[in-house]
Amino acid sequence: MQTERNNALTLRYVFALSLIALLSITAFFTLRFAITEQESGAAIINVAGRQRMLSQRISRFALLYVLNAGDRENLRTTLTNDLELFEDSHTALINGGSVRGLSSDEVLILSGNPSETVSDMYFASPMNLNQQVKTFIAETRLLLADPTEELTLENTHLAYILEAARSNLLSGLNTVTGQYQKESESAIANLQFLESIVLGITLLSLLAEAFFIFRPMVSQITKHTHDIQEGIDLLAKQNEVLSTSTRALATVAEISTSVSSILNVDDLLLTVVDLTKERFNLYHSHIYLLDEKGENLVLAKGSGEAGRIMAAEKRSIPLNREQSLVARAARERKGVTVNDVTLSPDFLPNPLLPDTRAELAVPMLVGQTLIGVFDIQSDVAGRFTETDVNIQTTLAAQLASSVQNARSFERSRSQVEFETLVNTINQKIQRTDSVEETLQTAIRELGTAIGTSRVKAVLTASSNNSPTT
Image (cartoon, rainbow, N blue to C red):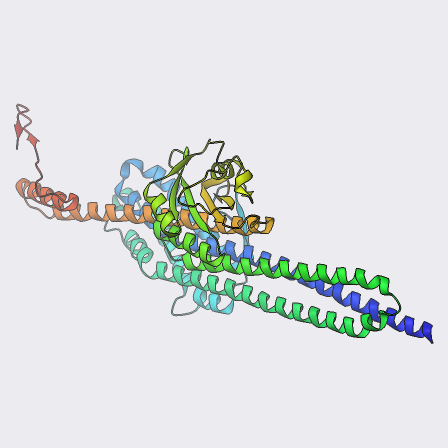
């Protein structure tokens, strides 16, 4: 009788342990799948966002290709390369495959198989983005094939490229990028729900195990009770770590979503430091950007009043400074943590942040290119773990990509505005009928463009080289 009871308890015990093992494996693969989905979603969003930048870049270089005859061959090469990347990225977004990343040596693998909503955006009315992209590519290639005498501002292929890049095509690319972002967030939410179910089943299984197995076995195998309890505590700790990591990843996704549509670098950085401080319950956060010479890290934005003051002072740290956590993270290209700043020789105390007790600095990288350093601080010693390093590294990488995209957008917009102004002045000059009217028009338009009320032109007569005003 006792043997049968022991056998029954053993079978229950084996069954319970098997169920717990299965749930632990399920939780492990759920987390792995969540990370994979996050990486895949980030790659798709980055490529989709880059398509917007490439459309603007292609339109700008198409205009330069027409206007700048002296550098036309170099512009043809640049325009051809951008067009190929634009076409390859479009194909990979629809059908899947590999495409070059933000750096020349980075390769992104896209899954393809877009959702029904995204497919409708690409292939159905009213957007029919796939046809828009193909027409845009075809018109660009036709422009490149046009003879030199047809390369004027009245060229119909150029007119289509410029119009598409600032209206329907740009709007469509913005819309599909936003849809990719929404679907990525939805996938993460579904995984969080699945994780909750797994956790609930795990807890219910543990409760059933305690009632049907551990309670009757207390009088028979007291010694093993302690070991089993340790296993339960370990599993609960693992679930807590899993939940914390998932919440942190969700926070990263939330911050990335908040800044995805911001194209002004200053606004983007300020939003990130404020949201990071608030969402991760930090004492302070700020961002250093590498200067153009690649020699100094300049504080661009910081959270709170202290951050505003330091940014206004243009504080900077030389990249080669040994006694600096920020410079060290930039040089080593990896996150650096100090959980007790009073014991670290690399910590630089700041009178504006007197309560700092722990600090974490992570490099902002696009491939191997250093954009800057993301630095966060806590008023609690021992605050940061290896998980925090991984989470903040992910956020810093997405931030670096956003900064690079925003900079590219600002440069493209400034160039387009400049070229448009030059074109407008040129058109007005071409409509004049005399030299005097030409000079008056040129002087008036240049004065308006540069914001001055007085512009002087000096002409030199060809006969005696005497100046005429």
